Image 1 (tube, rainbow, N blue to C red):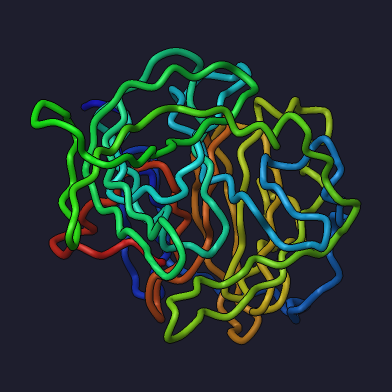
Image 2 (cartoon, rainbow, N blue to C red):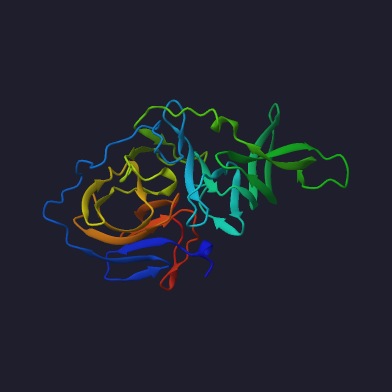
Length: 330
């Protein structure tokens, strides 16, 4: 099986069930220990956004998230320095044939995808409302395939140039309203990455997605000291906890990693296979799961439904659980 297409999802169900997906496995919940009363004091301290052990999320100087690191499409044993690709205005994205879901629906923050240095084939639909002149705009909606060349430590985005259509031989022509326009797509380095100075905050805001007529709620976000600070950043995986879920056991050791329902908590763990115990703020149920964590990948620990907790590797393709398919949580 092609490992790039292997779903890495860890599902923990409140029914008695055993699921194996790729390297992931899950067991039925167990009775919690008598002294488990969440919320509990955190066993890892908070780190500031200027800490070099942070994942590559980026925040503005007033504490709102600007770039959300979605994880990496690097091979599962790659521990070198990545390049990054920003997905602003991009939908229906695939990189080297691997589809990336959900990057445009997470929030108003732009998603970052980590890529190994070198050339990659990118397919996408570019959607943007572009102001052309006073009281005039152009709705760009165009599907494209192009090659991008990524260098380590740098971030890139796709830029769309728009010009009036001058002759019949031009490519990438889009007809809109009373005119036709030629669209030219190019790769640009995101220069503010090299100049970025992270704020020294310990609590930030993930802005909810704004749909114009309605808006998702904002979430507070914190980052904890890595489980093992001696592990290089390139060899760590990252867990993002949501929905009031706590990790209360890690490889047989009692821990307390989590926060309330309005918070999202991220912590770095060493790559490799780990045994986790989880519980919810509102429930006296203890879940157990086995996570095979790959370096420089991000795993979102959240509820799939009222009975199932998943740890979803964001850059892996979702697949079927048993006989029924499920959609990616937004």
